[in-house]
Image 1 (cartoon, each protein chain N blue to C red):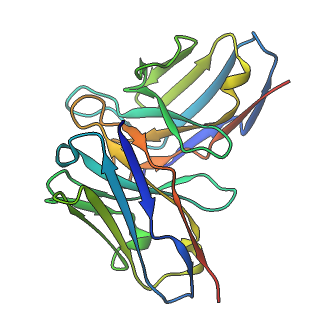
Image 2 (cartoon, one colour):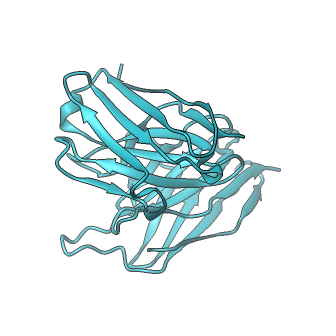
Image 3 (tube, helix red, strand yellow):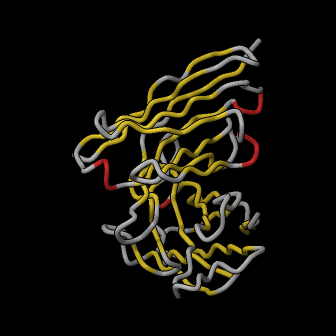
Length: 112
Length: 120
């Protein structure tokens, strides 16, 4: 299985500052089709997860440009610039390259 | 609007069975693959199973193989998860999620979840 390791476990951010979350996979997520199947989801408290980023760095429809993804192969980063109160929640990376699909353990982001 | 609604959760004894349903509306259901993802209380997300848009391919996490069966009825816009031989570790909120096969392959639409509790 592709083990997804997220760090840090939690993050406390001052509004307006930036935050970064790391996600490392035990297997390369680059497919022979040229795509890298790495996603980021946000789960707000009491809600279902929602898609933020697909293919490492592509923002899903309606996602603010404060969210950006980067990385390649096995190492990935989600950056939230100018954090706002609505960004609070747990962020998960997920790989879609290998069955079983696997999620990172989650990073809880809170506001100071 | 586009929507997925799960149902069928509840309290069941270890060794028992339950069938979850995921009813879709507002989009062309037969064009999309559907996943089940679960979340144990206070824990992270765990992918459980997937069924292709036409039901021709199904995949499962090892821990549920032989116990869970995913199926779909495109005439009823519904995906099912038949869960047998349930164990304490199956206690979780179960979400169904749509896979955007056309563009992102991501889970772009999620249901609100249905809770499954194993209790003797």
